[in-house]
Image (tube, rainbow over all chains, first blue to last red; front, side):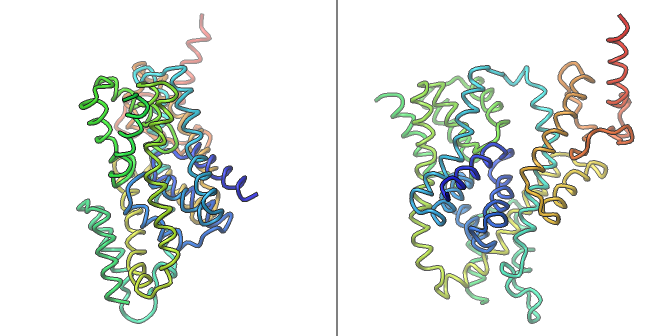
Length: 179
Length: 228
């Protein structure tokens, strides 16, 4: 049963995952945290942090981890391959009826229209992670270190395009000292 | 060495050493496939990437499948795909077992308390950059705002929101495609609210544009077709 659920969830994510790994976060979070309850938001956040620090696509990393925590080694392989399955089918279809970029303005325009929605999707994933489990000292005491970390990391990432791995390591050090 | 094995090794190396997801892999793939091995000519490679980019799913896997298939057929495609994902799967499986063991240690917990707010920032920042690069105006800001509201507040499955957004964008693209014969290069002047079926009231064009609104364009198109 759990295998069927994993298969269904990750095939669905593979089909609807437009716009890269970050855009898939929202889909994965909804299924894994809200719908099936396989992980808590905190587990999910930790996993995103680990995925960002390890090589390879974030979505594959997440699929492997979710599969492993819910159904062991077999589950991890199943979830990863389920995520790739739609890709295999689609790439073959594209190769069969080869559409070059030049005569494919329709798809181009569709994707352009889709972009603002995908941005909203990613933003929603970030907002859903803003809870008191992830911001432990929010509203407690006078120093909200979590909020300070979040704001500083945001400024560094948005305005200065700081390396995400560096930011994760630095905030880990801050957490170690502060808590 | 046989091509599928070479493909496997090439993508394995890239999968094992590239941090930062699919797009970071792209320049490594180009270097290996176009410059070093000379499997695919440069212009064909980028043409292909443009197609692959527009597909849903894992970008790195799509790229691997396409390159693999182009170089060595079905076996090449699967060899390249496995090469791209096996390092990820292995590393995460190892980390998952270690992480389970140590995550309740106070030291690890303290470190992660610091990391979690940072992860939130690392997700919010690229989404805002994307809104900027998509040239969202005050009028079209309704799209990302509605998306956030539906997913975050109403807890509607992102799957439905994406499907609605695809439907809306497709209608928009069809309208734009009719407006400009060259395939709608002037798309920057209007974006439709994706959740809705187009209504005559919805302002789709920016004031700068002098082109008739898509709606009237569609109507005039229909009239033209009706004439003969």
